[in-house]
Image (cartoon, rainbow, N blue to C red; front, side, top):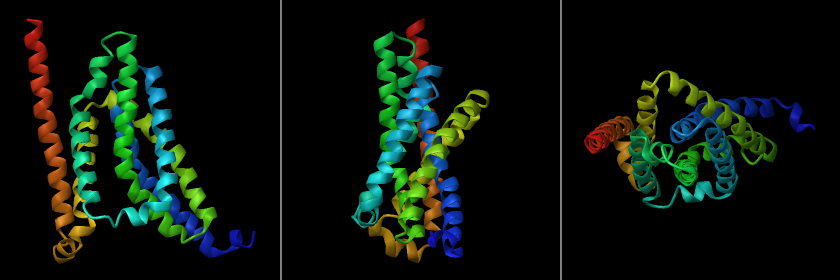
Length: 235
């Protein structure tokens, strides 16, 4: 109880709220992109399952995140995975095709969405976990609060993003670009590139811009090829 009355505790609460609001946004975008092509009922299921697994991942990674981030090439591999996920999501991926078919295909569609959410969140939640853990500084109350707060933020954020994407399709491009941006940052943040990143501080932003540009360019190209092939088959 004495801990709750200290200024440091409430400053920590404020910091964690701010960190969660900022860093949960990219996770919400991934969930929204992966679930946007599903029927409304399946969208809700994908959001709930995706967010649930995302929170479980955060809890599991909290214990080992700091050590994981020190493994060489881990973030480079994670960044490359995010690039692939960003391109796949921009194409509409398998979920769009599955929705035009039968019940079995729709089930595959929701499983594909959840799988995509899990893979992306495994990479993207590391920064959130480390930031919250560092702010908590061993205080389990703050740590649990930070993890618990991310649940409604991801759930509400992804539901809101799906509605915005339905109304403003160009937001899909922004979302895919954001994933590419995070991928570029993740690659440069790898432990093996510490010396290079310190020598060239702007490298982080250059990599982020290149990552976003790569996802948008490749994703749009593959999307156009897919549309052309579909139109050709309908003739």
